[in-house]
Amino acid sequence: MPQNEPPPSVLLVDDDLQITGALGQWLQLSDFAVALAASADEAEAVIEAGTAIDAVLSDVRMPGRDGLDLLRALQRRDPELPVVMLSGHADVPMAVEALKAGAFDFLTKPADPERVITVLRNATAQSRLRRKVAALEARLSEADALENRLIGHSPAMAALRSEVAALAGLPIDVIVVGETGTGKEVVAEALHAASGRAGRFVAVNCAAIPADIFESELFGHESGAFTGAREKRIGKLEYASGGTLLLDEIESMPLAAQGKLLRVLQERTIERLGSNRATPVDLRVIAATKTDLRTASAANLFRLDLYYRLAGVELHLPPLRERAEDIPVLFSVFASRMADRAGRKAPPAGDDMLSALRRHDWPGNVRELRRAAERFALGLDPGIASPGPAAAMPSQEGALAERVAKFEADAIRDALRRTGGSIAAVVEELGIPRRTLNEKMQRHGIRRDEAAGD
Image (cartoon, rainbow, N blue to C red; front, top):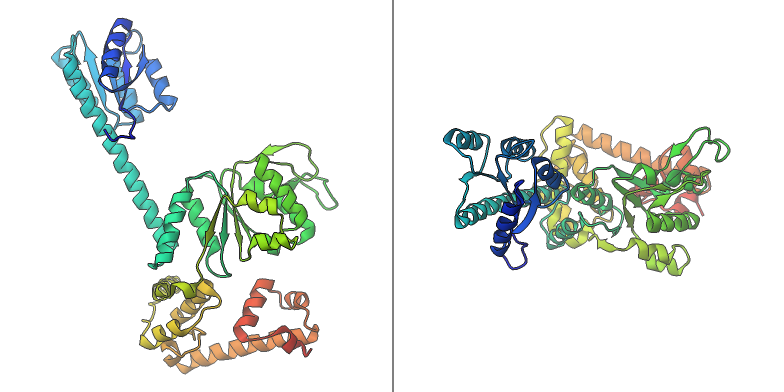
C-alpha cells in the first residue's frame, strides 16, 4: 500500500456480535479499516452516510432482510462495489444464487481467517483500482475540455491549463488579469466547467451597468424598494448561487457597491434592496480586470480590502504577442468554426496569410484574431496589415468589404463631429455599446480629437 494511502476499508455486516467482534479485530490486525453493521438496514445507512467503503463482508442469515437482499440493494446502488457473502448454512444453490446476484465471492462458516483476508484484499484492491481508473478518466476528460477551451501549444498556455485544472475544484475566489481580448471570460468559463459546481455561470460586465442601478442589478430588490420597483427582482449574486459569478471589468464597479460586495464575500449572504432578511448564497466569484487593482486602490478607485478578499489566486493571461506560436492554430480553429456555422468549407491559410499573421502585432489579442479568422472564413478581407489569400478572392467581395468599412468609419467620424467629440452621445446616436465603438475607432484609426476637429 502506498505510504500516504489510507488502509482499505471493509463494512462487516452480521447480527452476531461475537463474530463481528472477533472478525473485526482480526481484520484490523491485518491492516483493514473496519465499519460494523448488525443488519442490512444498518449497512445501507452506513453507505448512504458517505462512509468510504472498499468492500462489504456480509452474513446471509440475519433477522429481517437477509444478506442476499442486501447484496441486491447494494448492486443496484453500485454494481462495482465488491460484496463477499458469508454463511454457516450454505448450500450449493444458495452460493449459486449469491454469485448470480453479483457477489464477489461466497465463503462458508467457519471460514479460514487467512482465506477471508486473501479474498478481502483482492476485493478491496479491485475496488480501489476501479476508482483510480475512474478518477484518471475524469482528469483526462477535464484535460480534453480545457484543451478545447484554452487553445494553444505554447508554454504559457500549457501552464495556464495546469493552473486552471488545479484551481477548478477549490473553494476559492479568483482574479483573472489580462489585456482586453486575451480571453478572461473564456478562462472563467473553463474554471466553472471544470469545478463540478452544478449551478449557473453568470457573467456581469461591471462597465456596462449604470451606477444608479448597479446595486439593484447585483443584489436584487423587493417590490416597492424604490420608485419603479413594481415587483421583486432576483439580483445576479442570488441568481448565480450554486454556481459561478464572473464580475468582468470589476475595476469599473462603483465604490459603494464594492463595500457591499466585500460583505457578501465575507458573510456569503445578501440582502435585497428594501429587505432586512439575509439570504444565503453559495457561489464562487471570479473577478476579471485589465488593470492592476492595487494601483487602482492607491488612486482611491478600488477598495484594497476587496482586492485582498478576492485575490485568493491571481491568474495572469499572456497577450497574444507573447505566445505567437499559438496564432496559426487559433486562426485555423476560429476559421473552421465560422465556416461550419456558415455551412461552407474554410479556405486554406496559405504562406502569404501565415506571414501576415506573424507580422501583425494583434493589439486586440485573441478577440481581434478571432474576428480576422471569421472574416477570412467568409471570404472577406481579414483586416490585417498584409494582403492574404482573401484579398485574391473575387473582387466583388473585397470591394464590398472595403465599402462597408469606409461607410462605418465615415459614420463614426460624422457622429463625432456632430456631437463635438462626445463619446456618450455617439454611442446613443449609433446605437452601439461603448466597447464596440472603442474597438471600431481603434480598427479604423479614428482619434476622438481628430474627428471632433479639436
